[in-house]
Length: 267
Image 1 (cartoon, rainbow, N blue to C red):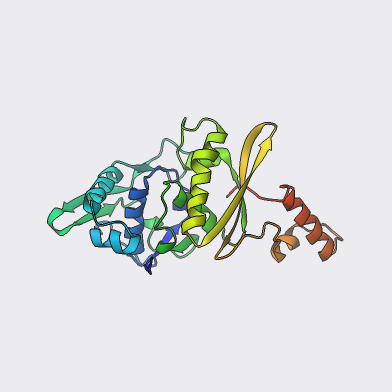
Image 2: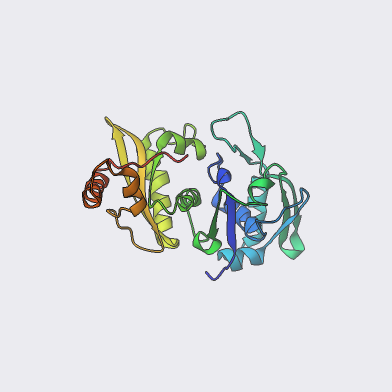
């Protein structure tokens, strides 16, 4: 994949509650990657996506590409998003307009005006990554996990509450058992990320009694994970009063191995 396109999103959009197929996600990524996220977008701005975009930037096979593009845009037109997953009664639509040009193999679409501040005029609290690093994902959950982890890429470790994860992925009653979330959501996403992106990820689970309450993701961008790596800032933050640098590093490394280090729920 040789695409040089870059995706930039406001962090609130990354943690919003929504459900999208991998095809719908690709449409959104191609639109966002085509704009300068620092500039203002007019409410009536039309994004254009073509079969060539899908083939050249995503690597989609040309056969049936336009049919799949049409289907993705039609289903995306019906989708909603909750910017705050805790406010389930407040939703907005991704799109308010769509048009198809069959003979040219292109579609045009317009995002809802209320969504535009989360992809344009971004000056702070945003996340950026290369389109090519997520283009080959197969699981519909892979991009969500990648974006969550790349947002906190300096941490190299993130503790995620299962309830929070269920809310932002809008799983509802699907995968009622956490073991099923692990099997059908987490593991396929991590496989995708490790196989196709610039990130290496491993994960563990935290239990309260017999119940899995959290997942701990250990990851590194552009390299191999060191599960015992302790950053200087982490030691400085968690060292005890009067504790030497060497003793603090040794203690915190041991705690990390035993899954008792400070890995907070995303805020």
